[in-house]
Image (cartoon, rainbow, N blue to C red; front, side):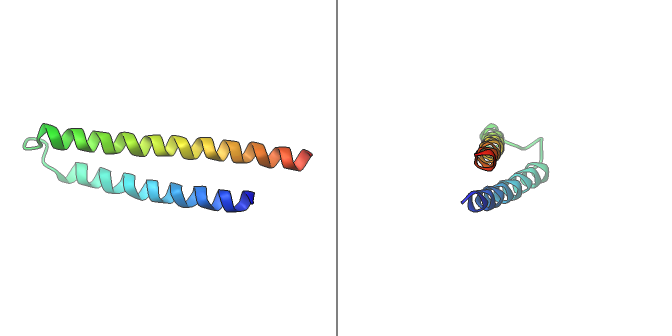
Length: 74
């Protein structure tokens, strides 16, 4: 069961990393002088969402490791 959770967490992490790379490329491709405030706000919100996803993955991996250690020493 722990292996399935770990594989799921790795899959979600890969999706988040690809999303982050896409957002970074879009942000670099848009001209800074003509970038509207709404577009900048949207890009910043998307980056914040990706960072929150990274944090959730990290917490999930820590919890998974804790449960793994508990089951090993039980």
